[in-house]
Image (cartoon, rainbow, N blue to C red; front, side, top):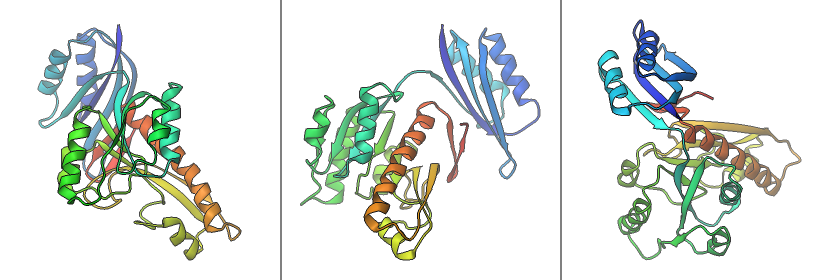
Length: 278
């Protein structure tokens, strides 16, 4: 017997829960957890169920498609670890946190490889016996660099790609290959202080809160669907350096929280926002 996660999103209508529950019962499955939400603005229905049993996946999905509104999106995944490829540059705080959690089996994922456009982190990554691939961007066109990056990433067929302070802006062509599969951690509480040096921007503005945002990557810089955010109180005693140190702690916490939600199939992307069943 195995646990599976059923994800459904569709137009809302009366009787959906009854129809879904009837199908699940007909396939001799037990509902362990069921959460649902209706977005009144779009009249859309979202559901996440954890099921126990041995489902005939194609038959169950086909049965649900027949009963639910047209264009319903139905996914049935076995509850198991997902595979990640991590992209990094030189900053190590988020990457080191992920590698440590992976080493001690504290994250529901396998880190298949780390890819970087600098060799700086190679000795550190190899201590965890994780493959490290160096792909330089220097002296290359953006297209050439991203073609090489695409080839390396796809060789691992990851479920998701994590940008752990990967300081390169990805092209629309690259992002389109991995739609809603790239997760980024941004060092500010979006939409404030986008782009480079956010802590310096925050310090100069005299902010009283700093934060971090984890989001899916789309073609708008740092404006993809938000998965998780956290903030931290600061005051006039914080210099830029101490603000950066505090910010790094928030970034680690936000990234791992977002990843846990995604890895457990708790996140629906709808337009440019997310529905999160925490």
